[in-house]
Image 1 (cartoon, one colour):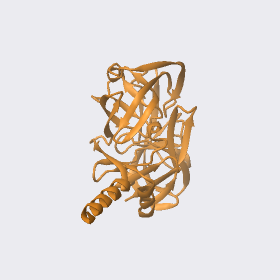
Image 2 (cartoon, rainbow, N blue to C red):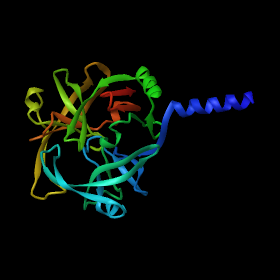
Image 3 (tube, rainbow, N blue to C red):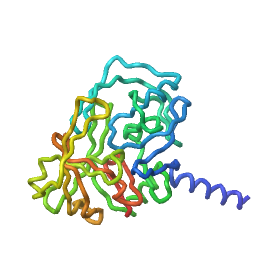
Image 4 (cartoon, one colour):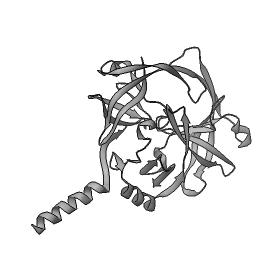
Length: 285
């Protein structure tokens, strides 16, 4: 009897340590992919901390058995200031591992995401802290206890949340650029590997000279194009956690960028905990 009690107690402790682990893949492109179910239909999605709103491909959206088109719509802006007018839909029974959401507002686009079924935004995790573990290739759904342990083990970085009418959610943090400017950057896991972008107005203030320039047409709107300038940046670091830094990297400075900048997040550490309720990022190098 005592042996059974000890085994049961150990099982309970293990279950309480974390809410659940969900396998992820990290692609050569730097994108993070994860599987989830919507109304019983499984899909393979890109986890995108900079997406704002969860968006499915039309192919996947058509498979969902129950959805309700909302009367209103949503106007979003990509970081390049490209406008997107989006219809909204209510879907049901969103499942990602042990995380369940009874209903969610999403949209869809008739686009090809290279075989993936859509992008998952931070709205899904609005009340659920989670950790991206790049070493173990898993997403960990944190409990209050495991989150407390994570805080003690890593560098704590304040987050700022951009809530747009309760429909979209993006995350930001402050970074020191070239020990000169403190800029608020959008943390964008969907940006791709080694992607750092800043508003072009900071080129001169940082004393940088571009090596070249490019003009890129939108894959969604052929009439929209953005111009960017490439330059080498010496250093990017978190002001209150200087160990979280990257040096000597190529960046693009984009005309009309609506933020100070955006960047991918994989470089920050081997484990990144995103605590939206606590407005905090915890990084383990």
